Image 1: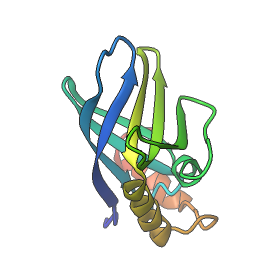
Image 2: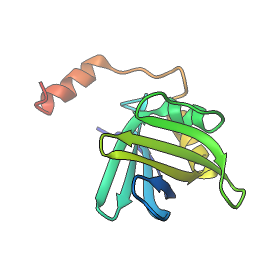
Image 3: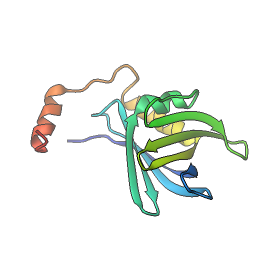
Length: 140
């Protein structure tokens, strides 16, 4: 099956985390799979290995312009200390929380590419295909 993944690689700056004393630059990749049209995945390369978070695409869509999110992921627009437009992604987990800063242009490019594949409001899932995937993967 051709999944037509949309991906963009960028640099995240980890600007705050529990017990952190300095900012860290991290390699980040956002990916969007039109077979799961409501979700995006963010993969971060950290010193202790890769960390992946999957969350609603709408958080990135809305979070570019106004605060979005009320669960484990919050997104909002901001200015960096140097005055550049950035998008902040806050991740909360039982292990703690972290704030990541992304260039607004990189987030916009990713969001626009995902919306080109599946426009907002056109998200649909082929239930038969989804069930077949579950059965093929042995998840059920």
